Amino acid sequence: MAPAQTLYPRATLRKTIKAHSGKGVSKNVDVLVFLDYLVFMERLIRESRIVSKQANERTISARSVRKVRRDVMSAFKG
Image 1 (tube, rainbow, N blue to C red):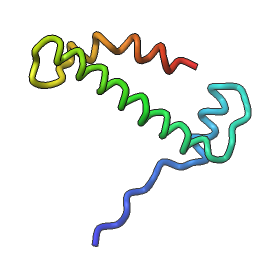
Image 2 (cartoon, one colour):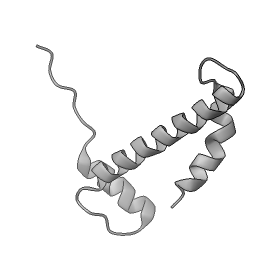
Image 3 (cartoon, rainbow, N blue to C red):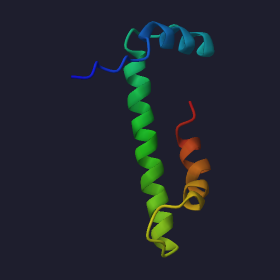
Image 4 (cartoon, rainbow, N blue to C red):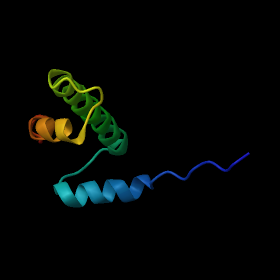
């Protein structure tokens, strides 16, 4: 059986987030960041799929992602 993949050190991530924000962070901030990332990616893919279908494309292209990127990113700006 292969060894389990090592996760990113939680303490390092907390220190990085705390240094970047300049505020205190909870001990589960890494989980919240990951969940926010998942929601962001889900919305980006959903919006890109809509743009692709409107352009009669079969798959999501880089062009459709670029078209929706700014709007989706602005929704997640804190």
